[in-house]
Length: 257
Image (tube, one colour):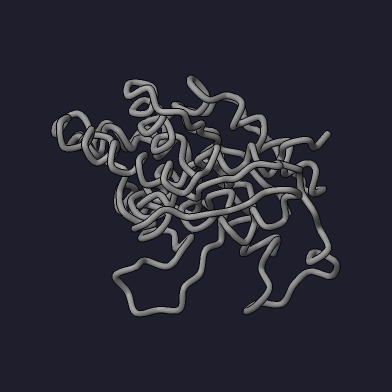
């Protein structure tokens, strides 16, 4: 199984430690992972702003760079969702990478079968795998793209059995205490263009979300998308609120060599 590691532009520029933690975690699990040189933005910002034609060359570049891999894994639910859902349309359905693209959480849970205790057949011995150690109380943030486009957790508006793939993985970390805020899958207010065009609404949604995370008594907030964590961290810093933010792969890989 050949894995191409895709590190989105904003992760590379602002949160490089998340990219490095993803690579370290995949290698720790004995996986064949390669970081192809020459990666660019996936095109999501252009397309979301109404400039889809400017996103098409980036989609083509992505297709050329990653088409030889069995899976394309990324630590970003929003970028992964954009690739999977929009690339076939942008490339007139001449696209083979879209269905190979997976967020690192769903890849570890659904393909590697870490923390997956029911449904598909487990790889022998994976139920015994332990990851890093993180002796802290952590509040779980469910990003909107992850909930409603990638299926990382059950949406509260649907009458379906409750599940959370992020929690399943975090339970493999030694010493961690996992909690969830009230209204666990409500948007934090980031939303890319939404946070630019509706600044006041976005900021208030962020304040509400951070306050709910703090009410759990957690020391940290974790989630699968740096954009949501960045938005809430900015709110917390501006309001002088004492809570920290860390991407889920940083916690999963914490202490691994």
